[in-house]
Image (cartoon, rainbow, N blue to C red; front, top):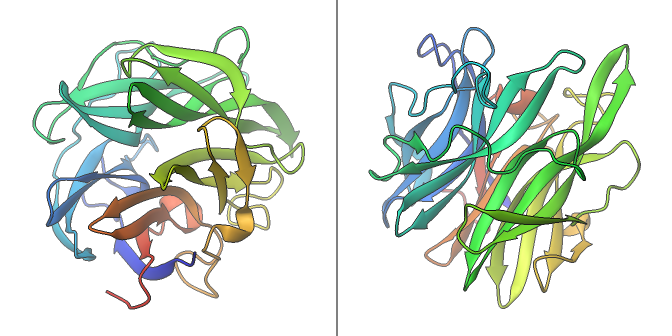
Amino acid sequence: MHWNKQGVIFHTDHQHDWMVSHACVPTVHVLNDEVFRIFFAPRNARGQSMLTYLDVEAANPKNVLYVHDRPILALGKLGTFDDGGIMPCCVVPTDAGLYLYYVGWNPSGSVPYRNAIGLAVSHDEGKTFERMFEGAIVDRNRDEPYFTASPCVMKDTDRWHMWYASSTGFVVVNNKPEPLYIIKYAYSHNGIDWHRDNITCIQPKDQYEANARATVIKENGIFKMWFAYRGSFDYRDGKDSYRIGYAESEDAIHWQRKDDEAGIQFSDSGWDATMQTYPYVIKHQGKKYLFYNGNGFGKTGMGFATDEEQSL
């Protein structure tokens, strides 16, 4: 398929002291037929990722209807896995409320940071969230000793699937540790307790590739994944920057990588000319939408593309 770019939706620019820059990791909840609620992570003056949302017109997401004026989940208690930042990753409507799977950030000593996956729930369609647990629901363990991040969760009949990033270590570049990570698989029967068999879904092209932030839909019995991947030596808007890959699976576990079918390329100039990352794909009223970040890991804002030929 081919994605038709529709441009920037929102650009963070010092709207509040907690919303200074970036509009990272757009995560979309279909509020109703007319409105999408997009959760995202702006950075505060200390560079910490916060959690908030904006509402856009479903028929034309460039039409921003409302931007929330405060964070909707505070940073974690001192010493917990998310005391240094919060990024939304996936939302799943359930009978118990709207589940938000997110990544928590911790400053680290020997490396820049470590991450883990948390779960919060909303009973008001995402206006506010509360943690279900103070601790992470998917963290490093004996098989995955570094960190976990960027979960995508899908409830599929009687099984919940999760595709998440798992760090495989660090490579030192210009005297700085840079993280490596791959996409792994977990499953659950309640969306809370996860079974992890150390299964890798997407094989890196080489030892220095990192891939993360899967987004998955299911069409005609086929699981379709878009994900972000990058190199390790010049990936901050350089030649190894994040771009969007693609893969397919019949069982949600074993994947065939088909990056040539991702359907999107860097623009010649502008907000997504040097980076495209953190994809989130939804289907709504027979149309697909791809929400993503551009240059600078979201510093130039969030935008979207559709599978329709015309511009919105």
